[in-house]
Image (spheres, rainbow, N blue to C red):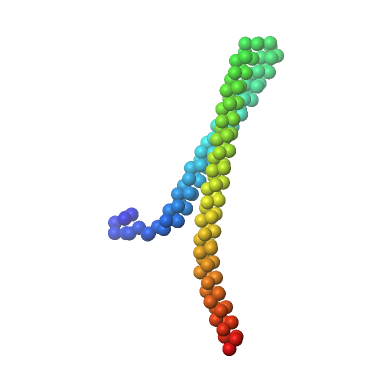
Amino acid sequence: MSKEGEAEAPVSRSEETVASVKRQQHQIRIRLWLANRHINALYSQVQDLEAQFKTAIKHKKHSARYNLRQKLAVIMGMKIVYLNYCSVKSQELDRLEQKLLSFSDQDEESMDTDSGEEQEVSIAELSNVCQH
């Protein structure tokens, strides 16, 4: 019961499944958005470190270059991890979209089957009428 005296409408199993898939899609989209924000932040950090690295080369600061290379390696590794994560989540999102399409196709087929059966009956009746 949702409110006093009101009964909740019965929800079919496929509607629950569709709602669950849509919820999963929404969560994945949020995670992808957050991952993209992190990737953009990492890109800006890489650009800053590259500028510092060029300055260190210009001023022949070997120890600074070493430290900057280490930082760049760590950030580039993190960026690769985030890119792989985004790729996996995008594939998962595509799979969920295909699942939703299959649900909608099944619903359309069930509707088409009912109307198609009625048409077949009416065509059969017409052919019987025409033969007599």
